Each structure stands twice: as structure tokens, then as C-alpha cells.
Image (tube, rainbow, N blue to C red; front, side, top):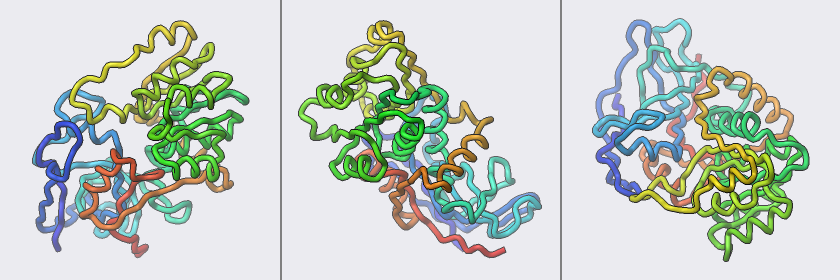
Length: 339
């Protein structure tokens, strides 16, 4: 049985291309004592992975050239010599981009197969959902009637942020990169306003018009000119959750823009950067809350799913072309459900 992996062939300069990825095929491993053999079902591709393609210090180590890339994966145990994970168990974990992985169980989490679609444990009930939950509720703390702005609102994190803000009584404004996404945010998810930043003649005026009472909370996934526009609208004691800066991930030079410090000082605002792993000890709380709201019909979750292990690099590159609505996933295999 063959096992194909995707390795980092070289470090990109600017926007990555297909040349940065190399497929390597070898014989599939077998589970030894205390191990499980995992068949990959779903692979998550996420914007933060772009930073790991660079060399240098960050909050996670960089990918190594010539070695398999890794990230969130839902998998099925197909061989087991580990009493905690019998054959047929569905798991989620941080695994390499391979069709099959061997694990000693560390870092794996068994997931129920009947609570929600298995793919949701890479989305609504995984890293993106938890990022939205903790960033919005722990940092932004929206109050009824306040205005919440979400950049990258049609992405995996942003869609959940907006819905959670609405659940807490806030008025929600989102930015997205297509008219279709704007319609989705307003008509399907209940955003009060949504702006296509690619076609707005003046993004600063567009955001100001959408926020006549100013901005109380800003959940920032994007940075750049959108954030510059929001800073001028901050109300007294506004809160900013700094989650991502996708607008600059492929920059070859450090972007220079308006510095936010004066605006933060004038409004006595809080800006806090965070990584979802900061809240790892509280993950069960977040997953339970998100699952409850989902089962109650209060949270929707959109996925963009492409099929085929060979499609992983293109799905990843598509993130930076704005091709996904909600969570971008690659479906590699179907869950067999055999135990």
C-alpha cells in the first residue's frame, strides 16, 4: 500500500506557487506496539500556514524544507495497537500531509461521529470556531447594541464571529471580497451590513457609512487598509481582537500604513493579539458552547470542500485568491465507520 506525502520543496518569496510543493510516494507504514495507523479523511488548509513557510521565529516553528507539511487533520484509525484508539475511531489532530500517518496517540482527540459532520472538528468545532469564540467573547466582549466589525467576515473564523456577536445582541458589520459573499453574510448569517472591499470606491467611507455610531469591537483577520479605516471610528473603550493579518502574509517588504497608537490612545481602546492555543485549557468549554448553539440551530457553518489528496496545495493557494467561503477543506477519503 502506497503512502503519498506533500513536502515543502522551497521557501516562497511573495505569493506561494505550486512549485513550493512536492509529492513523495513511499510504502505505507504499519502500527507498532502502542501506535495507530491513521487514514486521512479531511485536511485543513489555513492562512497561518503561509507564515510557517518562511524561515524565522514565530509563534509556531517554520516548516522544514524537504519535510512533510502539517496541520489539522481528521483521520480514521485503520490499524491499532493502542487500547485508547480501537480500529474505526475517528480522531482529530495535528498531523502531516500524508495519506497515512502513524501516531502514538499523543495530540490526538477522539471525536464523536454522530454529534456533527466530522469535518466540523476542523471548522466550527475546531481551531476556527474556537478562535472566534475566545477572541470575540474573551477579548471583544460585545454588549447588546454595540457595533462589531469583522474583517475577513466570510472566512472560517469570521462567519462564526459575526454569528456569535449577533447572538450577544450586537450590530454586526463585515467585510468580504465578493458580492456573493456580501449577500451570504447578510441574507444567510444575519449580518446587519456587509461591504465588498474590492469594489467599494472608498473603503474608509464605506465602513464609516456602515458604522454611523462608531465601532465598539473590531475582530481583525485581515489588517491593511480595512483596519486603518476602522481605527478612525473607534468609540471610547473599544476592544480589538487581533487574530490575523492576511493582507500582508505574502508581502515581500514590510507594509507601511497609518500607525494606530494615536487612535488607541484617544479612544482608550484595547488591542490584543492572540493565538487560539493561548486558550487550550479552555477548549472543552468552547467546543461545548459551540456544539450547543449548533444543535439549537443558532449557528450555521459553511465549508468549501475540494476532493482529492492531490488538491491540497491548490486549495491552500486558493485561500489567498479569496476562493473559499467559510472553511476551506480537502476531502481525501470517506469515513468507513467500521469497528
